[in-house]
Length: 251
Image 1 (cartoon, helix red, strand yellow):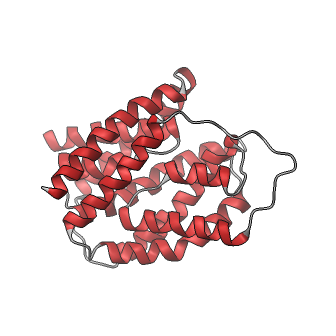
Image 2: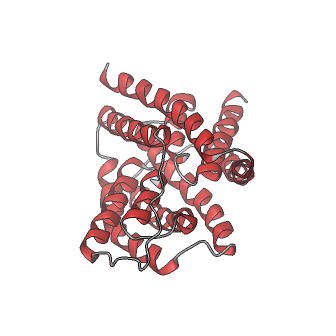
C-alpha cells in the first residue's frame, strides 16, 4: 500500500510539472522511481520513457486542439533524433548503474539551473531568418540521444532549441516540443524493450495515471500562477534531487 501511495504521489508531482511548465517534469520521474520505488537506474530510465510518452501525448492533444503545434517543423526536428534515440536507448542498458546515475544527475543539474535562471524570450523577428539544415539536424540528433540514453523527454532542452534554432514562436514551442518528445521517446523505448529489463507494471501504471491527471491540473495551475514562480519551485526541488543523486553516485 505504501508503494502504491508513493507511486500516485510521485506521478502527480511529475504531471504538475509537465502540465505547468511544458517540460522538466519527466526529469523528476527517474529519481522518484529509483529512490522512492526501488527501481534500478536501467529500469527507471526505461519506465521514465513510457511515462513521458503517455503524458506527452496527453499534452500534445490539448495543444493541437488549440493550434499550437508546428507539425512539419516538429516532425523534421524529431526525425533527426529517431536514430540517435534508438541507438542511445540500446546502449544505455549496458552502462553501469553508477555511471548512468551520475550522468542523469548532471543533466538534472542543468535542467534545474535553466528553471532557476530568469528566462528572456527573444524578440520576434520579421522576416524569420532561414535556419541551416545542418544546425537543425544536429540539434534534433543531440536531443534524441539525450532522450534515449537517460530516459527523459528533454522538454527543458527542446523548447529553447525550437525557439532559437528553428525560430518557432514561444506560443507554439511547448506544443511542438511534445511532438518531438513523443517521437524520440518512442524510438528509444522500442530498442530498450528489445533488451530484457524487469519492469514493475503495478507501480508504473498508477504512476502514469496520476501523471496524466496531474498534467491537466498543471495546465490549470499555470493559468493562475506565473510561469517564473513555478519554475523556481520545481527548479529548487530538482536541484536538491540532482545533488543527492550525484553524491550517491560518487560516494
